[in-house]
Structures are given as structure tokens and as C-alpha cells.
Length: 77
Image (cartoon, rainbow, N blue to C red; front, side):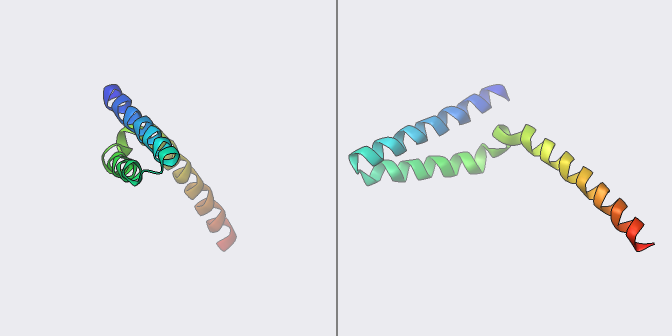
């Protein structure tokens, strides 16, 4: 798990580096490689990178939903 996360972070850093090189050299190929790497990280590495964040957000959404339902039910009476 931790090794996978490190790999995805390194790939993101490589993509950022390629993007900056592409901007400096005006070479379109670097930007295409950046887009491909970013897409792969988004599709394959999202769960490894943002698993903890997603759990926290789900807990917040559930808590907000419970509060909303409690308020809505009290107003309906």
C-alpha cells in the first residue's frame, strides 16, 4: 500500500517535471506524455493516493446527512 502510494506520487512528480520541460522547450511531446501519465495516475492510482481523504469525506457526508434528516423531520412535524 505505502509502496504503491510512493510510486504514484513519483509518477505525478515526473508528470509535473515533464510539463515544465514542455513549457520551457515548447515541445508538444512532453505535454502529451504528461497528459498520458496524469490520466494513468487518475485511473489507476486514485484509490491508493486518496483513500484516507475519501473515507473522511464519506464520514462528513454521512454526518451531514444525519443532521439534515433530523432537522427536516423536526420541521415536518
